Length: 429
Ligand SMILES: Cc1cc2nc3c(=O)[nH]c(=O)nc-3n(C[C@H](O)[C@H](O)[C@H](O)COP(=O)(O)OP(=O)(O)OC[C@H]3O[C@@H](n4cnc5c(N)ncnc54)[C@H](O)[C@@H]3O)c2cc1C
Image (tube, rainbow, N blue to C red; front, side):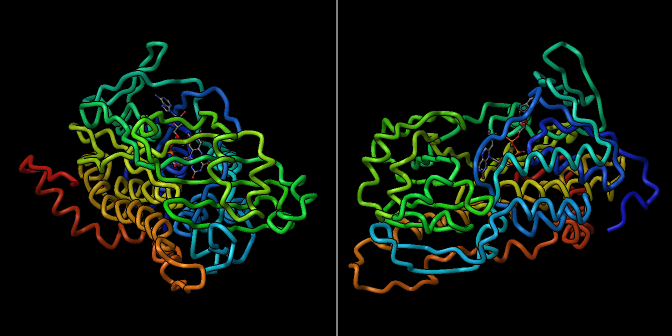
C-alpha cells in the first residue's frame, strides 16, 4: 500500500505508551504519512516478561512499515521449532501435534521483540520522549498533561498505555477495575543450559521446542528460545478458593515455588524435573475485563489501542498481534478520512476492529476450556480426537487489516457519517 500519496495534510498524532502496541501504532502512522510523537512514562526499558506470540497477521504489516530487515529480525527472535506437541498431563503421552505456525506464530521473548520495535520506531525517525508520564487529558483540544505540568496538543491522541490505562478511564468516564478470570498463572523464565545435564528433561532443551501438557482444569506450556539456551514454563490453573480470586494485576508479583511444586506433583516427571530446579517464578493472576462499549472519547479525538481496549488471555497468543492490526486500521482510517474528519476516522476504526478483536479474545477462552475439559472422565486407554484439542488460530493469520479497511471503508464510513450527523453513536456492545 502506498504511503502518503494522496495529498492529504499530515495529521499530528500523539501516542501514549511505547509498548509493542504504541510502537506499532507509531510505525503505521508514520508509514501512512502522519506526524507522530510517542510519550512513554518509563525512562528506560528492561527485558521484561517472557514468551509472546507474534503472528503473520502482524508480521506482514510490520514488514510493510519497517521493511524486510525488520521482518527478518522479528522472525529470527522466534522459536524455530516446526511443530508443537500437546501432551497428557501425568505421563506426557502426545495427544496431538500441529505446526507451530498454526498455533501462535513466532514465539519469542517479549523483551527482544520490544527492543526490535523500539529500534524500528527510531530508525523511522520517530521520536520517543521517555520519562514523560501523562497524568490527565483534555479531550476537547485534545491535549495531554504530563507529571511536570507541561501540556501537548495534537489532532488525535492514541492511548496505547496498557492494561492499567488512564486513557481508558477518560474514554469510559469511570475506572474499569479488573476482574479475576478465575485462573492463575505461574511463569518462570531462565537459562536452560543446566537442564541439559538432567537426563529426564534434556529433550526439552537440546533444540528449540514447544510442548503443552493438558490436564483437568490445568495446562502447562513449555518452550525454549535461542535454540534451547533459554527456557520458559507457564502453568495455568483454575482457582478453587474465593480468597485466591483477589485481583492483584501485576507482571511482577513473586510466586511461591514450594506451593507450585506441591501442586504439580502429578505432572509428567520429565517436565516436573525442570520445574523442580526452578528457583523463582511470577504469580500472575489472569485478569479479565468486560468488552468496552466504546474505545473513543466523547470528542472522538482520543482513541484507545492495544491492551488498553482489547487485552487477550495468554491462550489467544494474539495480544501484540491484534494491537498491531489495530495500528494499521487506525492509520488507514485517518488517511482516508483526512485531517478535517478525525471523528469519522476514529469511529470507523472502533467499528472495524471490535468484532475481530472479540473473536480473537474468545478464541483464547475456547482453547483454554477445550484443554481443561478434554481429559475429564477419560481413562488412560481411551483415545481422544486430536482435532478437539488443537489450536484454531490459523484463520487469524491470513488477514490483512489494512486491505480489509480499504475494502470496507465505503460501507462503514457512510454508517458512521450518519451516526455522527444524528449524534447517535451506537455502542460497540
Ligand atoms: C511488564 C510486562 C510484561 C509482559 N509480559 C508478557 C509476556 O510475557 N507474554 C505476553 O504474551 N504478553 C506480555 N505482556 C503483554 C503484552 O506486552 C501486550 O499484550 C502487548 O504487547 C500489547 O501491549 P500494549 O502496547 O497495548 O501495552 P503495554 O505493553 O502494557 O505497554 C504500555 C506502555 O504504556 C506506558 N504507559 C502506561 N501509562 C502511561 C502514562 N500514563 N504515560 C505514559 N506512558 C504510559 C507503559 O510504561 C508501557 O510502556 C506484558 C506486558 C507488560 C507491561
